[in-house]
Image (cartoon, rainbow, N blue to C red; front, side):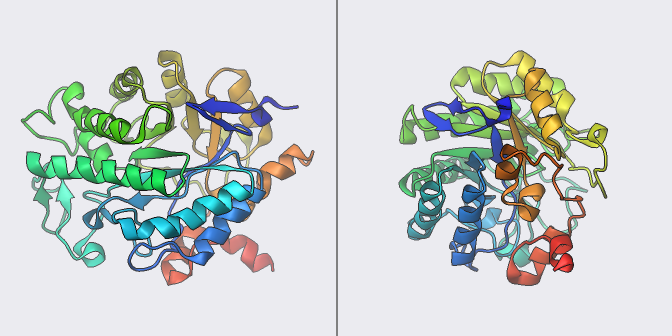
Length: 360
C-alpha cells in the first residue's frame, strides 16, 4: 500500500487518502453564480474516482470579485441550496469537499462584473482600465464578505473552506510588494500585509467554530522580481498557523505554462517552496504544480516534503485517476498540460479535456 493512499486528518475531518483535487474554474455556473446540474455531476464523478478531498472553485465572495464568466458564487443566501446539492453529491460518493472562497481584485474587469475593479493600491501601471483603491471601510466589507461566504459554505454542507491567496487574486495582492503600496495598517511590513488574512481567519473562526477546517492557498513566491518572496510567504504561513489555520496549499505565480510534462524531473515545480513551508510549520502542507506520476507523489510524501498531493488538470482528463493508481495501473496521468480544457471552457459549455475529446 502506497502511503499516498493512507488517510489523513485536517482538523476534525478524516480524508480517505492524500490526493486533493485543486480548485480551478469549471465555467459551469449560471450567470448569477448558481450551481448547475452539470457542475454537480462533475463533482460526483470526481468523488466516485477516489479523490480524497475535492475543492471546487474558485467561488467568488462578492460580485465585484468575480474573475470569469460562469463562475460559481457564494455571495448570497439564495445560492446555498444549489451548493448543498453539490456537497450532497460529493458526500454520497465517498469524498470530502472544501469551498475555495475568492475575490479577484485587480484580475477582473468591468465587462465581467459591471463594476469598477478594486485594488489594494491604485497606481500608474496597475491596470489599463480604471481601478478603485480599497479604503479601510472597504477592507472591512471584504472581510465580512469572506466571513459570510464561510458561513454559507458551512450551511451548504462543505467540510471546510479555503482562502484563495494565490495567483494574484485580491488576498495575494495584499501580500505582494508589486501590488501593495499602502501606507496604513495593511501595508509595509509583512505582518501588516498579512493583516487582512488574519482578520478574515479570526472572523470566520468565530462564525464556523473550532472544528471546521480552514485552509489557505498561497504562492510560495510570486515569480516576479518585485513580488512576494519565499521567506516572507513562509512568515505569512507561520502567522496563520500560529493563529490556528489547519492546512496550507502551496502554489506559485504566475503559473508556469508547460506544453508537456514528459518526464518525472519536470513534475512538482513548487517542491522547494513546499518544503520550506513543511520545514517551518506543523500543519499539513499540500503541494500543487505538475504532479503527473504516482512515483513522484509517493516520493514527495516519503521524503517528508509535503503531506498531500494536489492536482487539477489531470482530474479533468481522468476523474478516475486515483482509483486507477490504487487498482495497480501506475501509468502516469494522461494529461499533457496543454490548457485546452481552460480554452474550451471560455466557449460557454464548461471545461473538458480537448485532447481526450479528439480521441473519441
